[in-house]
Length: 267
Image (cartoon, rainbow, N blue to C red; front, side, top):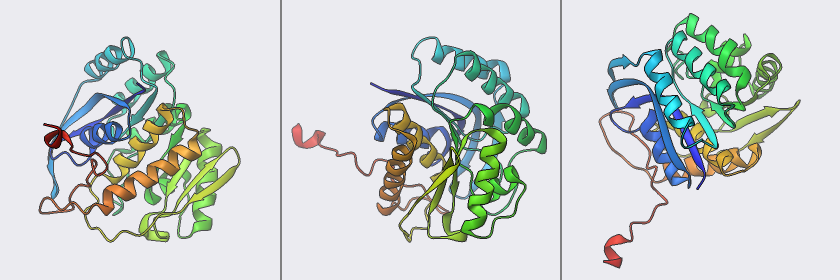
């Protein structure tokens, strides 16, 4: 069975972070493992507490995974401190990790900054150059490229700049700010658009985590990058279209929408 590792924070409400990643990887047919960067107390209405692990303990988690069940792909999510990012990059280099998908969680879709300037610089210097693909939203693409993005042409220019600066493929997520959920994949001097269908669902908690984990899952199974992104887009559309409605805020998707519950019938 193919394997994938997520390196991210825990979401106690289960809609994002480690929990969303493991659900996504399982639903996409790979064995999921995790290294937790932080515990969070959160639900669909917001985050009320964060407790980071130490760099030493994060390193121990990564050692435990890579020295036993070597992952076929790795996904990283939000890592708030510079030292933790350095630890991740050092260990991924040490173990020659393959198929690294970096969700560069730095800026919320609202524009609010989620990590410090110091951590952003470490992310740029240490983690992006070893990534196979990164999955920034529009505000994150603006930070990484130093450009403003107001159109599809701007998305292409920003993705090209990021690719040239860091050497990794870039999946720039259009979302609903610029187009109708159409994402741009730029790599090797060229680009391709992946069209998304508009799904009128306000419950989008964890969409970024889910998309990057689905891409990692498909890379782990040996798919090329274009097909990995295409399949991941299909998966997230299905999870949103299932119209799960939980919680008082922006709720989670149904990650298990395509998993049949046949056990009772068999019994």
